[in-house]
Length: 138
Image 1: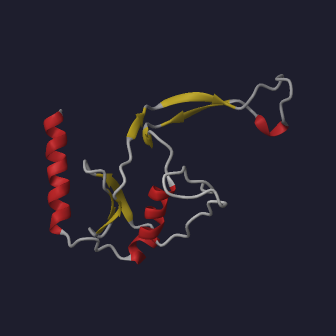
Image 2: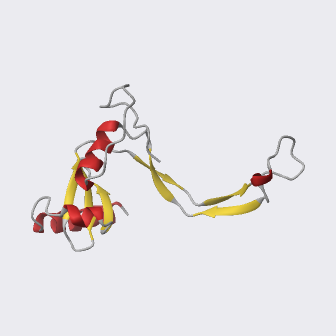
Image 3: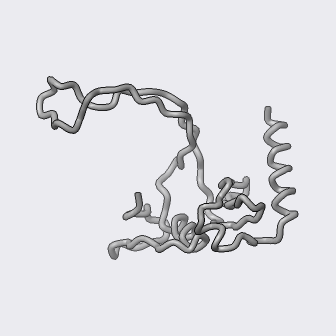
């Protein structure tokens, strides 16, 4: 299996090298023409656009964790003490597997994303930016 990943990485790196560096237009990024987000072994985060262009958005490493698929019961029972009317009915929710950052996303990482996609940076409320966890995003 590890050879498959090396081959896949080789294909990705070869494809990226064939493209001119950071050639994704801001319009491609603004209009959500993003096909994929890749974290290379070097820690670089790259956005790949539908038209084959790409843009490096960060030199900071993001450690990804695989979250397995699963299901859970959402809502609270009608007889639960303190229950509000908008908390039901209870129902099963299934979620596909996905990846999540192992650590909080920092202002440094999020600011790189904002600069690459021309989005407005969130306020730090005077607490500072850098490696502090980003706030005021959803």
